[in-house]
Image 1 (cartoon, chains in turn orange, red):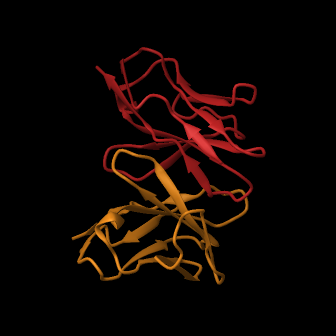
Image 2: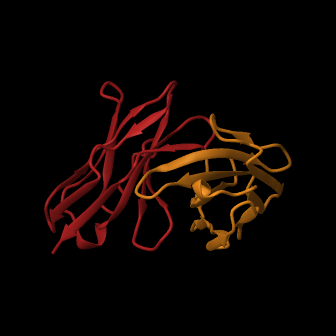
Length: 115
Length: 109
């Protein structure tokens, strides 16, 4: 299967700072990428859909000014958590698809801890 | 609102026993249903999707629109089936998925 890689795998940041998480498709062109958030022992919650070259579409209840998503190329999408607070601590997962009827492939996730 | 319900958080069976992981959904429109699996320390991967009607690793799932269910079944569980299983529903945008909370399956030797 295709490979999607997230970087970093873990990050600790201070409250009030911003942190960027990268999601890369390594061996295919990802026309669409998705960002999810997973709280401990809970399900994945879809945050936003990101299409290359256009603005992300956010799910209801997700603050777009808080979670900035950029999908500048067909192999890279970034999620920036701005002015992070401890309640933003979570596991963030991306997935990517090349479009059509192909499945979406998941990254390994990024554990964000805000102290 | 779109919702996927997996009532069992944990499920344990012995090797060779049948296993069924339950999934019910509430979704406006005609969703596509999926089962994803996450083995220990690995990423999520697609196990099967209802439109393909395939059997993967001995697992099958039938979409029951009347009961809005998509239960995952395997007649004879194996130890290597131990993993977290997520049911998910999606619409026309492939990859835009709503997940259930997951069921941790443990298969004892």
